[in-house]
Length: 392
Image (cartoon, rainbow, N blue to C red; front, top):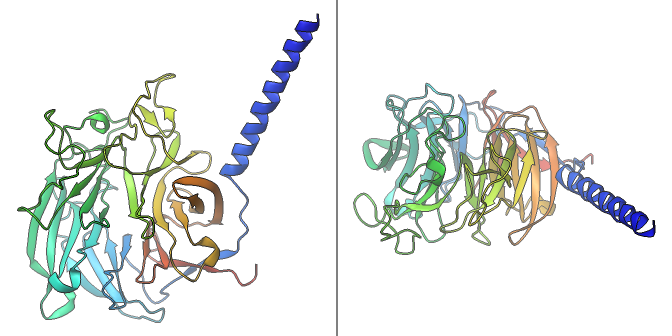
């Protein structure tokens, strides 16, 4: 009888431990907001048509550029009293946006933009395929692009209209990084996420300063492989990475990957790593009770569709106005408008806190020259910023 009671005691203890762990995890996931910060309209005199990106060329000219999904890039002075914007580039005639996730999706300014005037765009063409092109600024007007200067860098065939990825960014070593979704269709029916012979479902890394139109960096993980893997691939196993960014202090590359049925995830992207899709969704086996997780990189953070259902990646905050947020990763959810801060210590998560609960359709975050953070509301076309709540 004593052994029976001992067994019962052990089982009860395990139940209590598991229940306590789940409660701690739940608290970790959904800490109550303190509302020390508020979301306010940044440029009240300006609105945009379906904005999907905010960018600063980092050239000291105090300008911001906004992508409109149908194919326009607008430029304006970074001043809260700004009343006018100028069309910097109009490629709407080349852009296909019939699917909700197609269109003009990404912009990156060359690290030497002030000298060479190069910038790069990611868009869906009228055939539905992904195009990465280089343009040059107008030689007589810095607020206008030379519309005849388009140079094709890369074209990727897309089997479906969704999961295009679309983010462009230059890394600290000067190479161009490109995000591509799995090509769409529920559950990755073509298996692109795990197929390194396809560019889809990956983050690419290319050298636009060498070769024509580009070269493969010497330290790309699959350069000179004998297996037929695409040498452009830097990391793979991604479903639809909707926004990634580099932390300017640590150089960590952080990506938000939109989930399928149950989980949204945040990943630290490293060379050659496999982030699991479509074997896994987040840290869970996808569409199967068990799966082989050997060699798969798990997310540093995930949340279930109880808390949101379409993650929008942001930035590690390195500005000066929001002092308690310095070093935290700010991100949101397009589906429910929530904005969170993920406190990081290196590549470890310390806490996740709900910053604000909004009604915005957060399509993208952006930073200005001073690393202050902004966000786009896709529906209203307004831009917002995070500021201290003086009433808190």
